[in-house]
Image (cartoon, rainbow, N blue to C red):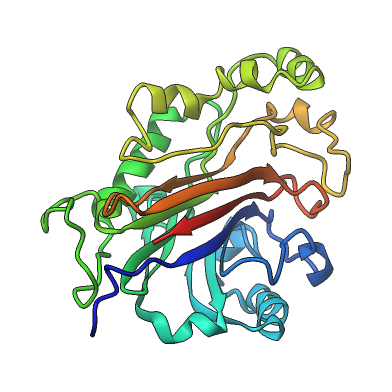
Length: 317
């Protein structure tokens, strides 16, 4: 295989995470996805097609995968791979014109739920090489509940250190990762990690709703558990980046409400940014670039008590 190390390639990447609350959205609810405008699409879902309880007995995702296939393939995209862990799912599509440059496709999953063996919580992932550069997309569902912060931090660490997935030996190895480096994401040039991480905002419902009403997202984010834990170096500390939280919390929202209605739901759960996307930029060459173009939620996709969160990227690899 001839190396492409000295060549540069411009690519656009669309990443989305959505907790479906046990449902399958109709294809017309996917109109927020800008089909045709990006080279790579990675769609991560939690509580996909069935609830977590029902997924104990049937984790297949035929209906959801059929919706995705009908959405992407007529628009000249091909499936790279999917991965499923109970109610978690990820699918990655690329432009069909990129297929000749695709290699070393692999997938994996790791459970972080009951006893660290049950997949009610955990991660699914798809890895591949494009132009001989290793890419990794991860979708996760972390431990729930307001006060389970340490459990969520441990979910992250388990996925990083106990997942049996690595860079393809036939592609260009990373200069900065030792072969025995236990941090999985260090073995890839480009990493995106999305999911319902379940970190909440600390405070009273009244305080949070008032700050939301005034659009004070900067102040609100200071009380975000994930922001606090990252700042303390307890999670997503291995070179990961996140865009600014300049949109309303995406959970817990009354289904089929637009504008989002937090009123009744806030009696059950504090509104929070549970749904997030992180990325790890390449450190191989000075010419490598990862530029975040947009970080937002899709408010028209109202199927569940979460709203989809998406990121748009331009990369040079």
